[in-house]
Structures are given as C-alpha cells and as structure tokens.
Image 1 (cartoon, rainbow over the protein chains, first blue to last red):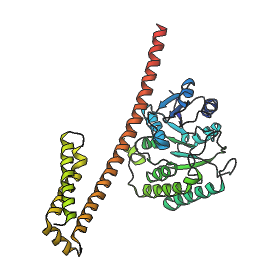
Image 2 (image 1 turned 90 degrees about the vertical axis):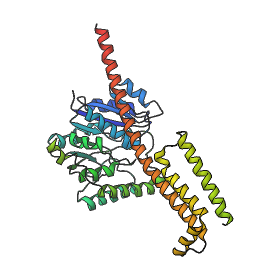
Image 3 (image 1 turned 45 degrees about the vertical axis):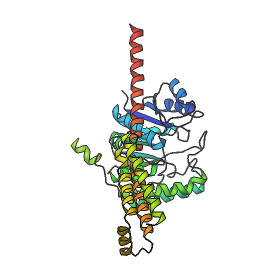
Length: 243
Length: 123
C-alpha cells in the first residue's frame, strides 16, 4: 500500500489528461494516482481507464470543490498519509510534487501550497488576474495574519489530518481554493508555500472567463468572509488528541 | 366587501383546496406545504373578514385595507421562497454526498471485480 495519493480532478480534459497522467507516473512512481472524472461528457474517463491509475467516476458534475472533496473521502477510506492535488490541464509540473511533500514528511506543516509568486518564474497569469490574486492574498493576511502569496493555486499537498477535515468539511463554492485556506487556518492547520513554476494550460480554457471575473471576485471574497466567521469544526489538531 | 376582496377570497379558497388535495394525493409533501396551507387560510380569513382587515389597517396607518392583504400575501411569499432555498441547499448537500458515495462504491466494485477475475485466471 502506497502512502501518497495524487488526485487529479478532471472535467472534460480529454486533450491533456493522457499527457498529464504519464508525466505524473514518471515523476512519482511510488504514489497512487486518482483521477476524479467529474461527470465529463467527453472521453476523459475512457482515457483514464486505459492507464494504470485509480478512477472515481462521479455520476453528476459536482464542480471543482465537490470533485476534490470526493478525492479526500477516497484518501480517508484507504488511509493515505499524504494527498496531492494537481490540475489535469497541464499547468502544474509533476516533477515538483516531491517538493510539495517535503514539509509534510518533515511533519512541520499540514498543508503545502505550490506558489508561482515566490520566485515569480514561469507563467504568472495575466496582470488583471495577478491583481485579483494579490487582493485575496491581502484578504487572507488581513483576516488571519498568515501570508499566502498564491491563494488561488490548485497545486497543493496535505497530510491525513487536513484530508480528514476536507473529507467532512469542504467549501461548497465552485471556486473554493481561497476559501479552503481560511477554513484550514481557522481549524488550526499549519500552511506553508513552496515555490513552483507553472505553465500556461495545454488545452481548454480557464473556468473563469473575463466576463465572470467581477462576479468571481465578489463571490470568492464573500465566501472568504463567511468562512472567516464560521465556527471551527474541531475535527483537526484539537480533535486529533481525542481520537 | 369590495370586488378585489371577493376575488382574493375565492382565489385563496381555491388555492387552499388545491393544496389540500395535492397533499391527499401525496404529490406534495406536507413538510413543504405547511407554510402554503397556513398562508392560504390566513388570506381567506383576512379577505372575508372585513372588520378585522379594516381594524388592522387603521392600527398600521394603511389607508386602503386591501393593501394590508397584499402586504401579508407578500410576506408569506418571501417566507415560502426562503424556506425553499433552505430546503434546496440541504438537498444539494445530500446529492453531493450521494454522488461522492456512489463514485467511491463504483470504484470499490471495479477493484473487487478485477481481483475476482485475477483469481479466476490463476485457478
């Protein structure tokens, strides 16, 4: 039984999924790979089935957050120690997965986020999006005092404590990356960032088009604020003592 | 009684009867229709009872009594829509959980099938 699970949520990613899977298998051969097919209507599921990977086929399209949560439920069911989430569109470099895992294996942190903005190398998004990301970064700093330079990054890893929390309490919002950070900090998990280099996506388009940008900003900001005033769930560090 | 009150009273009465009928046929859950029933009955009573309506209107400084009727109707509608939003959120949470559980179970069945076919080939 391997102790690391790499989850790849995929919704209609037939153009990029095969290549991403091969790269991940090459980069981390001693990990299990879980493709979460979020009700795709293209060949994503078929392509994944032909590879030597684990596959979750969601009968409905739950959106990004619901797909990720099912990955955490899977990790909880089969007792994985470390869980990595990586995008199926080829933005993230699988060779950097090991770097994400280091702080977890040392036991100093519960969640590690791959950040584009530590070394500012590679694809760092458009200026407008950078502005948005900086705003969320500021919001997190303001509310929690923790500095997260790339809060929208979907390239993350966490340990089983955080995974257990996410399996039961994952934000329902479609764009939940920022919200999960606040939620995790509120539930006294320790978060750090490691520098990564991202590429522009191979195929497909971002889930956030320019027209939706303002709506996205308002929705995520509100989600962050609500997440901040929510009660901590007590299934994490504090709860770990009792269990 | 004004014309509008008669129309409202008859309308509310027909509506309440429809609700009761649907609950009887089990095509409407009692849980979700309690507010509808309650508001229907309140509206009938307010519409037919001119004195109560006028009295309440004068207390609330509403010049035309029928406006109170509209106000009450509106408030009920808001309450009902809100309760539906709460129910909808609860249901979407349940569907999400079920979807995830189905996916996990499907995965488990497939793994078991693989194991069984491996055993079959080795035998």
